[in-house]
Length: 139
Image (cartoon, rainbow, N blue to C red; front, side):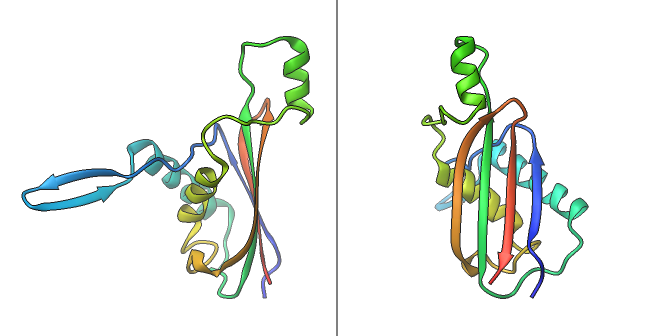
């Protein structure tokens, strides 16, 4: 069993977008929207640079903290409350779409398959330094 793995993905988080479809003759194929695909590649690149591990093979617990940037508009009081975690993001994108982007990107790098994840905690916060913090632990 490996020790817990921690990874920070700097920059504004991007949620998994809805799949797009294209038709070639009578065949229809689905594909990731370019923004989602690019963000997943970015996560993979950082994970490969930072983590030099074999993918986990057992049951996994994952914690994902999504820190969105604080909007420019708004009073100083509201910005401070966002910074202090009093006001949390209740706007789109949904928390599960952020999680899906992360779990898809880390498959094959941190774990063999995302069906190994048996426990998860995902949360959204505001921050002056947008990022995603991931902690993975083999149970």
